[in-house]
Length: 350
Ligand SMILES: [Zn+2]
Ligand SMILES: [Zn+2]
Image 1 (cartoon, protein in one colour):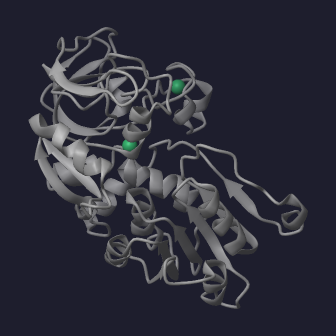
Image 2 (tube, rainbow, N blue to C red; image 1 turned 45 degrees about the vertical axis):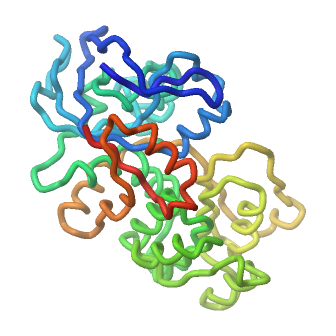
């Protein structure tokens, strides 16, 4: 088969590799019908994730059809159309039982292993460990393009942004950075009862998209001198927003998120940070704030599927570019220059 193979920082190729085979009885093999590229893949290609070694097939998002199951797979069957969750989980270790499979001990202490510690989904076929736990049947009426956004991006925005941020009825929420993950938080924040969702970014295209995804207001940081003051002015009593969702991962956006919340407020960090940030404890110790971070658990997939079926959310809106799987190198070029191409998610179809 063919797959996107990582060959060290800056090096990747769409090349011929051996077909995956069942290794453990709980494995399944899935023929990938739809996949996409994630910001995490770009981090890997920059060399930011040294655990990824030469020869690894990239990708952790996908929808496909099961072609083979091991003898220990009891639920998933050959022929099932499935979402491949980006989190692999045994279902029985203490973290899985605590509903935090992002740190499943059986798969090595981190649930994200596709395109990281084992071969991933940017391929014609993929081996899925613990298939009964990591594959979710796609109901009739939910498209591949909708389903593939449930592998990672929508659960990440919802769980690590909206749920960890404890977005509640009537809350004023600021989403700092509205790339795909920020937009995923926006798409799901309204359902959690937010009264106001303020999108903050410097990219006019993305701010326009944010309104379509459910933001009520936008702040273009290129047009506003004091973003924190603007956010406070948009809160009910001028004291700050209830929840700031940080969806970029650089010191400036962290600072904005922390400064914009009210006493008792929440910062939900979703951004992947590459360097230290400052935490002014001498100012914040008195403020009764909550800060959360984390890796997605992907335990809300069924809930989000129901939201798609009811029409409450429409994740096909993420797709701005479509390519044949064979042209995935071209898709990488577009995604690596997403701002120039007005790209949100690029979708690959076999
Ligand atoms: Zn991803
Ligand atoms: Zn586990």
